[in-house]
Every structure is written in C-alpha cells, then in structure tokens.
Image 1 (cartoon, helix red, strand yellow):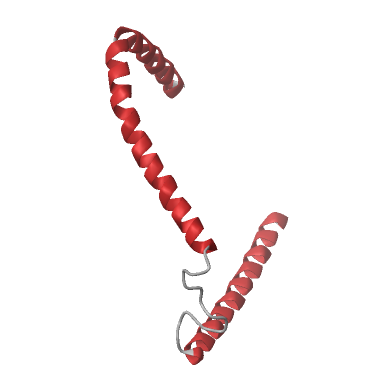
Image 2 (cartoon, helix red, strand yellow):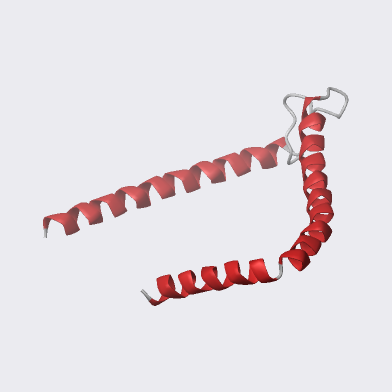
Length: 106
C-alpha cells in the first residue's frame, strides 16, 4: 500500500514540476532526442547488417559436412557426450516428476 501511495505522490509531484519547468524540459528533450536517434539508428543498422550478411551468398557459407570443431573424431565425442547429458537430464526430470507426484498424494 505504501508503494502505491508513494507512486501516486511521485506522479503528482512530477506532473506539477513538469508544468513548472516546461521550457527546461523541452530543452532537455531537444538535446536528448538526437542522441536517442543516433544510438537507435546504430543498433538498427547493426541488426540489419547481421541480417543482410546472413542472406548474401558471398559472405563465406560453410561447406556442408564440415564441423565447427575441426576434427571429426572430436565432434563425434562431443555428440556422444551431449547425448549422455541429455539422457541424464531426462532421468533427473523423471525422478523429479515422481517426487512431485509422491508429494501430491501425501
């Protein structure tokens, strides 16, 4: 309740101060707007560059059958290890489900 009342008081004070300092607020907004546009445009350009890079054919697509690891034997061992961890996760999940079912009946 105290947070609610404090929020309403802060909003009312903020509105009153906005009316009192309207011209400085507009100056601040006029100074902040170009910076926001600059940073927003830079982020949009970066994201657009990544999207275009993925679509263009000459940006060095990897050949099929190559592994990011390099050594195919090492990639196989990584796959086996991943499968082992997946099986372990499934086993633990089933144990957790059984434990939850046991708690529900008590």
